[in-house]
Structure formats: C-alpha cells, structure tokens
Length: 133
Image 1 (cartoon, one colour):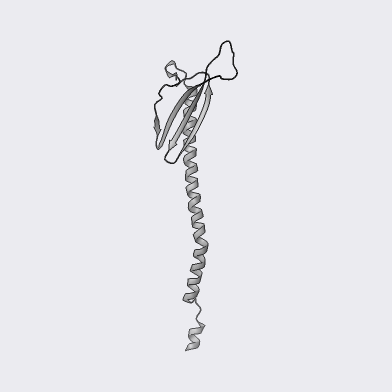
Image 2: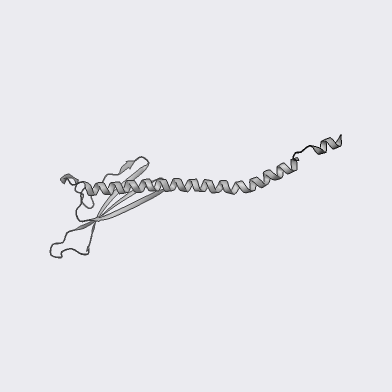
C-alpha cells in the first residue's frame, strides 16, 4: 500500500508554496515597472496634447489678418479652455529690440501662449512685429 502512495507523481505543499513565493519575488518588481511606465506614458500623452493646443493657438494668431484682431500689449486677452486644458495668452512689447531700421523702428512683441492642466503646463512663445488676434 505504501508503494502505491509513493509512486503517485505530484507536488507537495512545501514545493507549491516555494514556487509561489519565488514567482511573487519576480512578478512584484515587474508590476511596479509596468505601473510606472503606464503613468509616464499617460503624462507624455497629456503633455503632447497641451503642446499641440499651444501650437494651434500660435498658428491661429499668425493666420488671422482682419483689423479687429489687433492685440495690444497689456490688453486683457480672455482665458480659454479646451477640455481639461486652460489656455493663457500674454503679449509684451520688447524694449530695445535688436536689428531693424533705427530711423523708423518697428516695435517687436513677444506673444506667449501657456497651456495649463492639473499637474503641469507647457509654454510657447514667438516674436512678432505685427500683432493680430
């Protein structure tokens, strides 16, 4: 009878628990790695969306040419929202701008577009000689 019991193939409880323990030691760090990678990928995607919105706003400022679209330094520019993003536009006149004709100076303006979201912000700027909104 004892010969029959010994001949059955299988694992003991100690062997199963040892295998589960070793597997847990290997899988736990990998799980943390995947969670961190997923969070970083999500942050990168959000940052790219915000950058695309900022680029779009700067392109729209460059493209509009009608008279009512002039922007003046210090003028309040409305804050806009795009989903979870908030867009701020700021215009400042540059003092002592390099280059140009000293007899007939054209003012230069820095246009800065800042896109904020919960947890970050992206800012783009450009220099313009003519400002339009």
